[in-house]
Image (cartoon, rainbow, N blue to C red; front, side, top):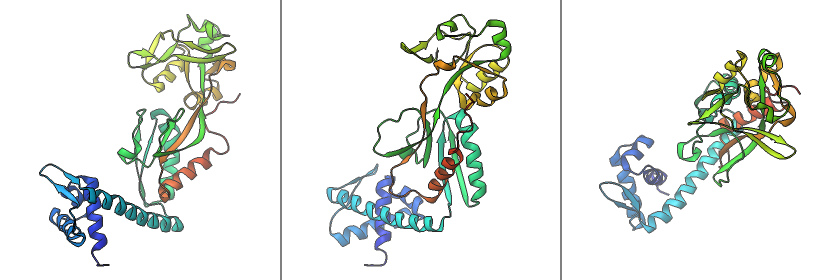
Length: 305
């Protein structure tokens, strides 16, 4: 095989993925002209046209599509060999791209990530703490922590690592002044601090013998921040209905008291999600292993009882 053959193939695959010779050159550290010459050599060698070139964009010919799919797989296989060797060395490096829900990520994912980065000095991390569901493949995210039942997606793998449990609670002072609700229907008329989604407050869900009970009465105070809701409950303003990963410390210390425990709604899975590559990079595998190990003996946020 000619010595520059793989370089020419890499230039072609990169150009198709990036959509232009210029962008491919930036990714490969080459000039636009060098990328164009690589593709011209491939076309001359194979005696076929691989790309239709216009002033606005590149498009594949039928022969180019066949070549692209095969060569892309070959290059992916080569990357997997590199990944396997790195796994044998066990040295995570590069940049870990991670996303997680805002409050949960800041409270319970960031400390694990901090420990992981301290363990591996050559590793960097880009984090997006957001409640928006990012497209991992489209946006180049390595791993996500998500809450809720997964949607079917053949491009993603998912692993349940914990559970989200909502609980209703208030300060002892509030309950002393207003009384303790015994059943979900008792909540009507109580001062509630509700989570604001758009222009509506999120309903509170309870499991009863008659089925799922929804308390959809607006809160007396409606806020779009779960952390602010927690502060309001601590101050005695009213009842809140939030996951125990937010309220767990307060419930354990007695700053807040849970009510309606027997009516807790069904728990929802907390999952690790990542693109379905055959081999995970050492940085992704190492982070997942550390997170699972930290939570293996019980998640840090669940209240007793």
